[in-house]
Image (cartoon, rainbow, N blue to C red; front, side):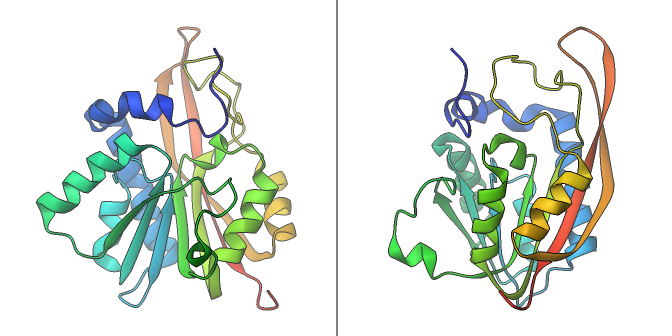
Length: 220
């Protein structure tokens, strides 16, 4: 059966072995370094990652910020991250199992604001990109910003499962327009990593990843 948008079942199944893939770890380090360079998180920063998985990016960002809220829909992925937090004696990461595409589950969720919201390879798993970007804008503090890493528009062969429901990357110009419509300004893109992999047709292919950064418009 096809996976649904933002399905947690696939990630629950893969959580225990997620970190064993060296290419995945390399991607996470490249993305984390790009976010640190572009967003310049500081000790006063309240940050949030959506789609945090096992925390490969979050654990790179956490030492640089005041607090970090790590959000995912997969209980198993969060379980792996929680084990890392315990083993590392990390005190500034809070994990939350939340689907940000669904209605808010707790009234307090609508009140919390973040200085930085970031993600790695998560946006293409979210069906309504425009509505989701608007939600992110509402979750940012005055002057806050986003740093989102994801695939450039690709040939539809990046994911091994042809039934997995995803966007096949993003056209940078189209995504910039969606961001501006959601109340973001100073939109900037840069290529931060190239995934070299054998796609499901058996051919070797290169898939570029961008990091897009933007700030919440002052009037919002």
